Length: 266
Image 1 (tube, rainbow, N blue to C red):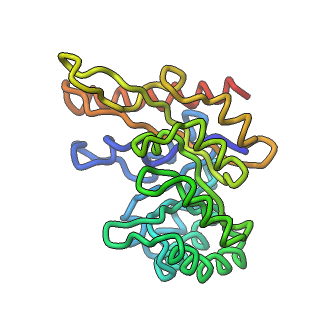
Image 2 (image 1 turned 30 degrees about the vertical axis):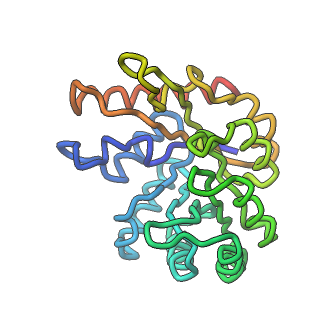
Image 3 (image 1 turned 135 degrees about the vertical axis):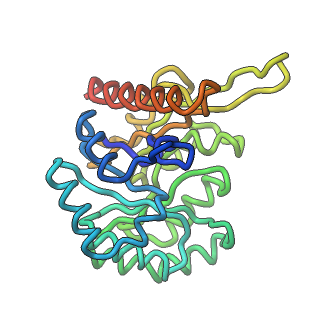
Protein backbone atom coordinates (compact mmCIF):
# COMPACT_ATOMS: atom_id res chain seq x y z
CA UNK A 1 0.00 0.00 0.00
CA UNK A 2 1.21 3.50 -0.81
CA UNK A 3 -0.10 7.05 -0.74
CA UNK A 4 -0.23 9.07 -3.93
CA UNK A 5 -1.68 12.00 -5.81
CA UNK A 6 -3.99 12.23 -8.81
CA UNK A 7 -4.04 14.71 -11.66
CA UNK A 8 -7.32 15.83 -10.06
CA UNK A 9 -5.27 17.35 -7.24
CA UNK A 10 -3.80 19.64 -9.93
CA UNK A 11 -7.15 20.37 -11.55
CA UNK A 12 -6.77 24.14 -11.77
CA UNK A 13 -3.00 24.21 -12.25
CA UNK A 14 -3.20 22.01 -15.35
CA UNK A 15 -6.34 23.70 -16.69
CA UNK A 16 -6.70 26.31 -19.42
CA UNK A 17 -7.13 28.91 -16.66
CA UNK A 18 -3.46 28.53 -15.73
CA UNK A 19 -1.11 31.01 -17.46
CA UNK A 20 1.30 28.08 -17.95
CA UNK A 21 -0.53 24.78 -17.33
CA UNK A 22 1.48 22.17 -15.47
CA UNK A 23 2.70 19.18 -17.46
CA UNK A 24 2.99 15.62 -16.19
CA UNK A 25 6.75 15.78 -15.45
CA UNK A 26 6.17 18.81 -13.23
CA UNK A 27 3.30 17.07 -11.44
CA UNK A 28 5.48 14.00 -10.92
CA UNK A 29 8.25 16.06 -9.36
CA UNK A 30 5.78 17.86 -7.12
CA UNK A 31 4.25 14.57 -5.98
CA UNK A 32 7.66 13.20 -5.03
CA UNK A 33 8.60 16.40 -3.20
CA UNK A 34 5.37 16.25 -1.19
CA UNK A 35 6.08 12.67 -0.11
CA UNK A 36 3.74 10.77 -2.44
CA UNK A 37 4.83 7.43 -3.84
CA UNK A 38 2.13 6.96 -6.50
CA UNK A 39 0.90 9.24 -9.26
CA UNK A 40 -2.42 8.52 -10.93
CA UNK A 41 -2.78 10.00 -14.43
CA UNK A 42 -6.57 10.22 -14.34
CA UNK A 43 -8.82 11.54 -17.13
CA UNK A 44 -5.81 13.21 -18.73
CA UNK A 45 -6.57 12.91 -22.45
CA UNK A 46 -3.17 14.11 -23.76
CA UNK A 47 -1.50 10.91 -22.57
CA UNK A 48 -3.48 9.03 -25.24
CA UNK A 49 -1.53 10.93 -27.94
CA UNK A 50 1.96 10.17 -26.59
CA UNK A 51 4.22 8.06 -28.79
CA UNK A 52 6.35 5.24 -27.34
CA UNK A 53 9.37 7.49 -26.82
CA UNK A 54 7.30 10.04 -24.90
CA UNK A 55 5.75 7.29 -22.78
CA UNK A 56 9.19 5.83 -22.08
CA UNK A 57 10.44 9.24 -20.94
CA UNK A 58 7.45 9.57 -18.61
CA UNK A 59 8.01 6.10 -17.21
CA UNK A 60 11.71 6.81 -16.64
CA UNK A 61 10.95 10.13 -14.93
CA UNK A 62 8.57 8.41 -12.55
CA UNK A 63 11.09 5.64 -11.83
CA UNK A 64 13.87 8.16 -11.15
CA UNK A 65 11.59 9.88 -8.64
CA UNK A 66 10.63 6.61 -6.96
CA UNK A 67 7.02 6.86 -8.13
CA UNK A 68 4.61 4.15 -9.21
CA UNK A 69 2.25 5.18 -12.02
CA UNK A 70 -1.46 4.46 -12.34
CA UNK A 71 -3.87 5.38 -15.14
CA UNK A 72 -7.47 6.56 -15.23
CA UNK A 73 -10.01 6.87 -18.01
CA UNK A 74 -13.77 6.62 -18.63
CA UNK A 75 -15.81 4.00 -20.43
CA UNK A 76 -15.81 0.23 -20.82
CA UNK A 77 -15.96 -0.34 -24.56
CA UNK A 78 -13.38 -3.11 -25.15
CA UNK A 79 -11.42 -1.22 -27.81
CA UNK A 80 -10.95 1.72 -25.45
CA UNK A 81 -10.03 -0.43 -22.48
CA UNK A 82 -7.52 -2.37 -24.55
CA UNK A 83 -5.97 0.89 -25.80
CA UNK A 84 -5.45 1.82 -22.16
CA UNK A 85 -4.04 -1.62 -21.47
CA UNK A 86 -1.42 -0.89 -24.15
CA UNK A 87 -0.64 2.42 -22.44
CA UNK A 88 -0.38 0.59 -19.13
CA UNK A 89 2.18 -1.76 -20.65
CA UNK A 90 4.30 1.13 -21.93
CA UNK A 91 4.17 2.93 -18.57
CA UNK A 92 4.59 -0.09 -16.28
CA UNK A 93 1.11 0.48 -14.82
CA UNK A 94 -0.75 -2.29 -12.98
CA UNK A 95 -3.93 -0.35 -12.03
CA UNK A 96 -6.30 1.35 -14.46
CA UNK A 97 -9.34 3.21 -13.15
CA UNK A 98 -12.43 3.63 -15.32
CA UNK A 99 -16.14 4.46 -15.08
CA UNK A 100 -19.09 2.70 -16.69
CA UNK A 101 -20.50 5.70 -18.54
CA UNK A 102 -19.17 8.14 -21.10
CA UNK A 103 -20.89 11.08 -22.77
CA UNK A 104 -22.17 8.85 -25.57
CA UNK A 105 -22.46 5.43 -23.91
CA UNK A 106 -24.47 4.49 -20.83
CA UNK A 107 -24.61 0.68 -20.66
CA UNK A 108 -27.06 -1.07 -18.39
CA UNK A 109 -25.72 -3.75 -16.08
CA UNK A 110 -26.27 -6.58 -18.58
CA UNK A 111 -24.35 -4.82 -21.35
CA UNK A 112 -21.65 -3.74 -18.90
CA UNK A 113 -21.04 -7.32 -17.82
CA UNK A 114 -20.84 -8.49 -21.44
CA UNK A 115 -18.35 -5.78 -22.40
CA UNK A 116 -16.18 -6.28 -19.35
CA UNK A 117 -16.06 -10.05 -19.82
CA UNK A 118 -14.47 -9.33 -23.20
CA UNK A 119 -11.79 -6.96 -21.91
CA UNK A 120 -10.99 -8.03 -18.36
CA UNK A 121 -9.39 -11.40 -19.28
CA UNK A 122 -6.85 -9.43 -21.34
CA UNK A 123 -6.12 -7.29 -18.28
CA UNK A 124 -5.70 -10.43 -16.21
CA UNK A 125 -3.25 -11.90 -18.72
CA UNK A 126 -1.18 -8.71 -18.50
CA UNK A 127 -1.31 -8.59 -14.70
CA UNK A 128 -3.24 -5.32 -14.72
CA UNK A 129 -6.25 -4.61 -12.49
CA UNK A 130 -9.21 -2.58 -13.74
CA UNK A 131 -11.09 -0.56 -11.12
CA UNK A 132 -14.54 0.95 -11.69
CA UNK A 133 -15.17 4.11 -9.69
CA UNK A 134 -18.18 4.83 -7.51
CA UNK A 135 -20.09 7.90 -8.67
CA UNK A 136 -23.56 9.36 -8.91
CA UNK A 137 -24.44 8.21 -12.43
CA UNK A 138 -24.50 4.55 -11.42
CA UNK A 139 -26.16 3.09 -8.33
CA UNK A 140 -23.59 1.51 -6.05
CA UNK A 141 -25.62 -1.71 -5.91
CA UNK A 142 -25.52 -1.88 -9.72
CA UNK A 143 -21.76 -1.30 -9.77
CA UNK A 144 -21.21 -4.04 -7.23
CA UNK A 145 -23.49 -6.40 -9.15
CA UNK A 146 -21.45 -5.84 -12.32
CA UNK A 147 -18.17 -6.59 -10.56
CA UNK A 148 -19.63 -9.70 -8.92
CA UNK A 149 -21.08 -10.95 -12.21
CA UNK A 150 -17.77 -10.60 -14.08
CA UNK A 151 -16.16 -12.43 -11.16
CA UNK A 152 -12.50 -11.82 -11.94
CA UNK A 153 -9.92 -10.76 -9.33
CA UNK A 154 -8.54 -8.28 -11.86
CA UNK A 155 -11.79 -6.28 -11.78
CA UNK A 156 -12.72 -4.28 -8.71
CA UNK A 157 -13.94 -0.93 -7.45
CA UNK A 158 -12.23 2.42 -6.99
CA UNK A 159 -13.82 3.65 -3.78
CA UNK A 160 -14.74 7.34 -3.64
CA UNK A 161 -17.78 7.62 -1.35
CA UNK A 162 -18.18 11.38 -1.76
CA UNK A 163 -19.13 10.99 -5.42
CA UNK A 164 -22.31 9.08 -4.64
CA UNK A 165 -23.85 11.64 -2.30
CA UNK A 166 -25.45 13.34 -5.32
CA UNK A 167 -27.40 10.11 -5.82
CA UNK A 168 -28.62 10.39 -2.22
CA UNK A 169 -26.46 7.46 -1.19
CA UNK A 170 -24.88 7.64 2.26
CA UNK A 171 -21.08 7.45 2.14
CA UNK A 172 -21.07 4.85 4.91
CA UNK A 173 -23.40 2.62 2.86
CA UNK A 174 -21.20 3.01 -0.23
CA UNK A 175 -18.13 2.03 1.79
CA UNK A 176 -19.86 -0.99 3.30
CA UNK A 177 -21.07 -2.26 -0.08
CA UNK A 178 -17.80 -1.69 -1.94
CA UNK A 179 -15.15 -2.51 0.65
CA UNK A 180 -14.82 -6.23 -0.27
CA UNK A 181 -14.24 -5.32 -3.92
CA UNK A 182 -12.07 -2.22 -3.48
CA UNK A 183 -8.79 -2.11 -5.40
CA UNK A 184 -8.01 1.63 -5.14
CA UNK A 185 -9.16 4.50 -2.91
CA UNK A 186 -9.63 8.16 -3.83
CA UNK A 187 -9.17 10.25 -0.70
CA UNK A 188 -11.06 13.55 -0.76
CA UNK A 189 -13.12 15.22 1.91
CA UNK A 190 -16.40 17.04 1.29
CA UNK A 191 -18.97 19.17 3.06
CA UNK A 192 -22.25 21.03 2.67
CA UNK A 193 -22.35 24.77 3.32
CA UNK A 194 -25.40 27.05 3.33
CA UNK A 195 -25.73 29.40 0.39
CA UNK A 196 -26.35 33.12 0.89
CA UNK A 197 -29.72 33.78 2.47
CA UNK A 198 -29.87 30.12 3.53
CA UNK A 199 -31.34 29.29 0.13
CA UNK A 200 -30.07 25.75 -0.39
CA UNK A 201 -26.58 24.32 0.00
CA UNK A 202 -23.27 24.07 -1.82
CA UNK A 203 -21.69 20.63 -1.84
CA UNK A 204 -17.95 20.93 -2.40
CA UNK A 205 -14.55 19.81 -1.25
CA UNK A 206 -12.78 20.80 1.94
CA UNK A 207 -9.42 20.02 3.54
CA UNK A 208 -9.05 16.40 4.60
CA UNK A 209 -10.36 15.87 8.12
CA UNK A 210 -12.61 18.92 8.14
CA UNK A 211 -15.65 17.47 6.34
CA UNK A 212 -18.01 14.52 6.25
CA UNK A 213 -15.60 11.81 5.10
CA UNK A 214 -15.30 9.12 7.77
CA UNK A 215 -11.73 8.30 6.77
CA UNK A 216 -11.06 5.99 9.70
CA UNK A 217 -14.25 4.05 9.03
CA UNK A 218 -13.42 3.73 5.33
CA UNK A 219 -9.93 2.43 6.09
CA UNK A 220 -11.22 0.00 8.71
CA UNK A 221 -13.66 -1.44 6.15
CA UNK A 222 -11.36 -1.56 3.11
CA UNK A 223 -8.14 -2.52 4.96
CA UNK A 224 -5.74 -1.01 2.38
CA UNK A 225 -2.57 -1.78 4.34
CA UNK A 226 -3.44 -5.46 4.61
CA UNK A 227 -4.63 -5.75 1.00
CA UNK A 228 -2.07 -3.56 -0.77
CA UNK A 229 -4.56 -0.90 -1.89
CA UNK A 230 -3.12 2.49 -2.82
CA UNK A 231 -4.74 5.68 -1.52
CA UNK A 232 -4.82 8.58 -3.99
CA UNK A 233 -5.38 12.22 -3.03
CA UNK A 234 -7.96 14.20 -5.01
CA UNK A 235 -9.80 17.49 -4.46
CA UNK A 236 -13.05 19.28 -5.13
CA UNK A 237 -11.59 22.75 -4.73
CA UNK A 238 -13.88 25.55 -5.97
CA UNK A 239 -12.34 28.34 -8.04
CA UNK A 240 -11.38 31.24 -5.76
CA UNK A 241 -12.76 34.72 -6.41
CA UNK A 242 -9.26 36.17 -6.07
CA UNK A 243 -8.18 34.42 -9.28
CA UNK A 244 -5.70 31.84 -10.44
CA UNK A 245 -2.79 32.56 -8.08
CA UNK A 246 -4.99 32.24 -5.00
CA UNK A 247 -6.65 29.10 -6.36
CA UNK A 248 -3.32 27.46 -7.26
CA UNK A 249 -1.82 28.32 -3.88
CA UNK A 250 -4.80 26.81 -2.03
CA UNK A 251 -4.76 23.73 -4.28
CA UNK A 252 -1.14 23.12 -3.34
CA UNK A 253 -1.91 23.66 0.35
CA UNK A 254 -4.78 21.16 0.28
CA UNK A 255 -2.60 18.56 -1.43
CA UNK A 256 0.23 19.04 1.04
CA UNK A 257 -2.22 18.86 3.96
CA UNK A 258 -3.79 15.65 2.61
CA UNK A 259 -0.48 13.87 2.09
CA UNK A 260 0.83 14.97 5.48
CA UNK A 261 -2.40 13.80 7.15
CA UNK A 262 -2.18 10.40 5.46
CA UNK A 263 1.48 9.95 6.33
CA UNK A 264 0.77 10.77 9.97
CA UNK A 265 -2.02 8.17 10.00
CA UNK A 266 0.40 5.30 9.29
